[in-house]
Image 1 (cartoon, rainbow over the protein chains, first blue to last red):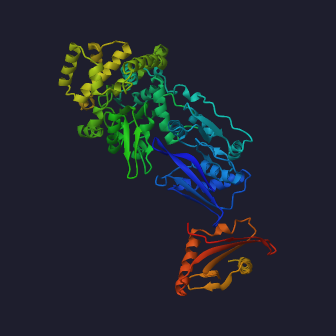
Image 2 (tube, helix red, strand yellow; image 1 turned 120 degrees about the vertical axis):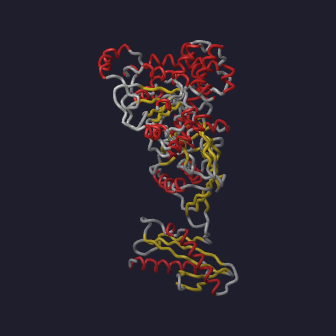
Image 3 (cartoon, rainbow over the protein chains, first blue to last red; image 1 turned 30 degrees about the vertical axis):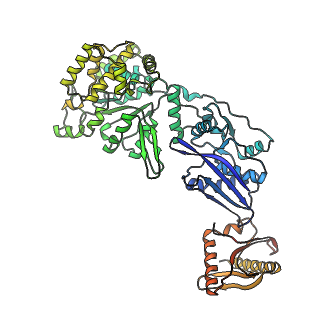
Length: 511
Length: 121
């Protein structure tokens, strides 16, 4: 008897339908065979299914069982086929029909219960597109799948329960989607008001957050670069509906959504260490997996000690920085992961860290400094919109200021301004494919950022004087637009542009 | 190997032989030995030669006899069959069967299954 149970295979962020064909033959030596390019995890599902069925109080059939995962030429990975295989076997021995227009998905535990399985959201999206109405998923993954409207999600606790459902003994109620507590704004480690001094750096952070601009901070050790970056999540605007879905898709594919999790609604802050492997950062592997740059999609990628990152990693970041996505090509498949992130980098000015320090002396030779600074490639620096120098805060000033901490602006106040500026951008770009100023291409700049004569003149003079590249020229206009948006100004004025010029690329000027 | 396991195997083979005889098979060889392997039973019915692998277990608490025939064993069985047919210049059909015997502790039969033509798949 041949039974077909529909399921899916997730390739990157795309899904395709996989028919799990289960055949129980009376002839032949009893055995259990899975064909259709299963990987180790799929092949091991034999043992899980066998134990799960026995634990559910059902005798495992002594028949020749052959499972085919069709189409047979696409490699299948992961543990999600446990449930469809088990349902195929059960439907044969318990004589129930597998409903049409349903998808099955989930990993089995040896005791017959279902475990949270990655990719539920992707499957739900596929189900809606391909016209499947019912989804049978592990209870812990049901909320994630339920975020997609238009499909019925059945939360399955264990195999026995699902068999009872199909035998019409006891029905499973469809899940009701619930947003849960991790939708609150990401808790930042620091509040902006805890950071004393550094007004210019805070202002730059606000601009970066408002327009989604990349930013690099250069400063001596202990000047507060890391603290500033760690306070950034507190001033980021929430994700809009479209962005939220994009981000959740990536996390679902990476298996990073906790059991019972719902849509991610806040911007992610990723801070990989510089010893992380290139594949871990960029994504890849034989079955391409999203890397840190994709996990930071629509959020922040914070690279502390930027010079310490391997050159290879930095250069690989060029494509996502420019295009907002990353294409990973492998001989068997090509996967495209979105990677539209805001890069926040921090670096020391020289090996000892005290170059240009107001009090301390730098002990590095010019050659050492040059070598150190050259580790950050020019093309990458050119793609960073805001360059700021973080000056150390005087310890005496520090204690004076400590009393004034309460007078400083809190993250929440700044965040409200940022949200407002984002809203203005979204309104402006309605109907366009972009959402923030940082994403503007040259055509958008021409359309939305008409410069008054005196503003253009100022920018032209500056670019001559500071030898700015054409890309930097355009970036300056984008940042000026964000500053204008923060103010609510309809046009970019000379004062906006003058402020932008402070944030021009200047790391090499310090030598 | 444990002496009693060897005995169990012997008992199982005798049971299988009787069973096949009753089913109308003619016993050609028992425990046919080559340099490389041993074939438990070679029987014949009509113009078909059947190579039989007998698996015996005492009780199923530690696994079924069926489980003990894996892909490798199957390949071996077919290899032996091919070698035998080539040696004897057998030009007509042949197949490989398995007889699985489960015994109770007093050596009476709990169950016996005969699987015909077990393929390599």
